[in-house]
Amino acid sequence: MEEYILTVSMTAESLYRVFEDAVRMTCAGYYTPDQIDAWVERADLQHWESLLESGLHFIAARHILSDEIVGFISVDSNGYLHDLFVDPLHQCRGVGSLLLYTAEKFVVECKSIMLDAEVSLPARRFFEKRGFHVLCTQEVDVLGIRLDNFVMQKSLVLQGNAENYDELLRLWEVAVRHTHRFLNEGDILFYKSEIMNHYFPILSLYIIYNRLGNAIAFMGLSDEKIEMLFVHPDELHKGYGSILIDYAVREKNIYRVDVNEQNREALAFYLHKGFRIVGRGEEDDFGKPYPVLYLSAER
Image 1 (spheres, one colour):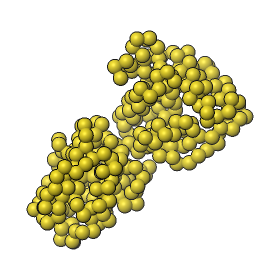
Image 2: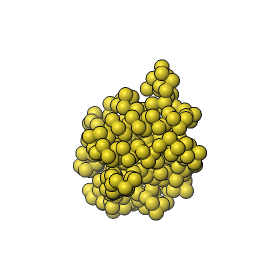
Image 3: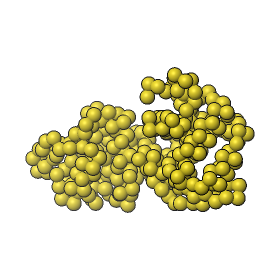
Image 4: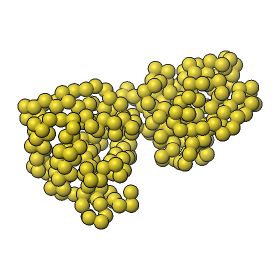
């Protein structure tokens, strides 16, 4: 990514050029010529001038050697991602990922908990690989011509503090009772006390919320590893665990985690995410007879 720098300085002409080239070349195999012509005609130069003067936050990628804008993203403070386009000659070089990552940071700073986007057919895979999921398919009218796209959403990771302890402890207990059925009641009560009194205060906590503002997944990080990661049973298999793992690796450079050997579903999840078993202990950190597998991911 040394070829590119980010900037908030751009012209409507530069946006229109990137947009038109991206739509005409990237979308050619997914939409008809009439659909593409209507899309480009609607988003003319005046359209981009108006958006630049609106409340949208624009970020662009500038190619250092050519000094040209080669990609851009726009998002509002509520987490609606309005545009993301990359010049076809600069696609598959990390430009789109960098722009999306930077926009996510802006939205988190605005205290929003979700990113929402309407995504073209060819862009679906890009967004899915970066934590978005499809809510529905929709048909939109563009100058009297119908186009299909996807309504997609991504939950963002927010940092927790002591005010979140009670809610996270409730989430922890619900998740543990669902996934750690090898524990007896006494063990659960013991761990519950340890988590609240000794673990939460020393860990960095990261939380995913739903639209109602309820915590549905969280993880706790030390300086060396993922110490805990739990997802509400009703929200399993929706990608929240992956979002947290990706955040730990990308943002915090954490590549280690321990898993109870009896928790086979969690083990399968971490192996799927690229971790591998590097060791085994007969007891957990509290000396209880629950074997632990030590996992590590490649840096």
